[in-house]
Image 1: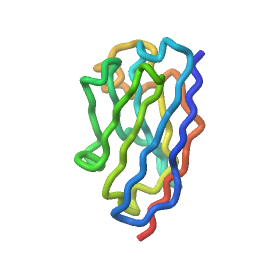
Image 2: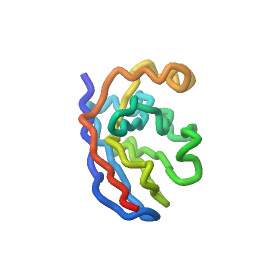
Image 3: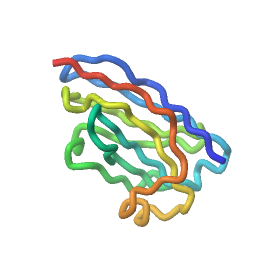
Length: 126
């Protein structure tokens, strides 16, 4: 069983930045493909970004490309989402997700995660 705990959300003005963190357990974290998703009120959950086990492969939704950066520190069992130049349309609950298959390209195709965090609220004011 993998437990994921997000932190770092909050209220920020448009153009500002936030960094989300997702602390994972157990120690097999380094085997997992990790991802970030978000869900705005009244909308379906959508993919934001994903990163493979080594951190060398990343992928982003078109809506955040060039503004968001996903990274991971396997020694700290933590994945990050650096969000810059935030826009009001980025307002959502952000969820960390983990895929135990270890297949980055499968997760990229299916976006099906095995484990989810509880979410952290990000609100961007105009």
